[in-house]
Length: 113
Image (cartoon, rainbow, N blue to C red; front, side):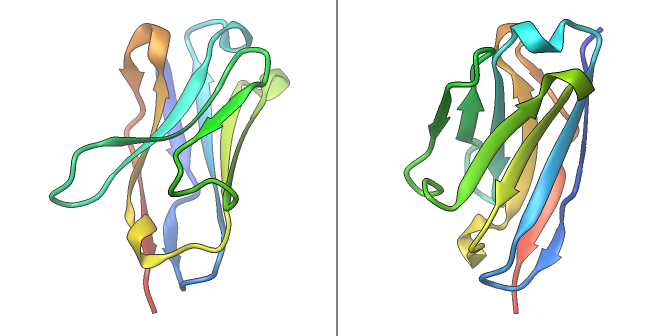
C-alpha cells in the first residue's frame, strides 16, 4: 500500500522559510510523478507544485519563484522548499501521488507574526 508521511511544517514569520519532506513507501517512488497540494480553512484544496519522474517541475503562479519542489529518489523522499513565506501560504500541505490518487496525512504550515 502507498504510504506518504510528511514532516517539516510549523509556525514561521512572514518572509521566513520552511522545507517540507514527504517520505514515500509502498511503490516504486522513482517512476512516479509527485505533487504538493495545500488547503486553507474554508478553501478548496489546490495544487502547489508537481514534479515528474524525470524531474520536470510545475508551479502554481502564486508560489512560482518562491517555492521549489524536488525529489531524492535514493531516499524515496519528496521535498518542498518554501521561501519568502506569506500569510496567505498558511494551509495544510499534502503530499500526493497522482497516479495512485493517494494523499499524505498533511502537515500544517502557519505564517504569522
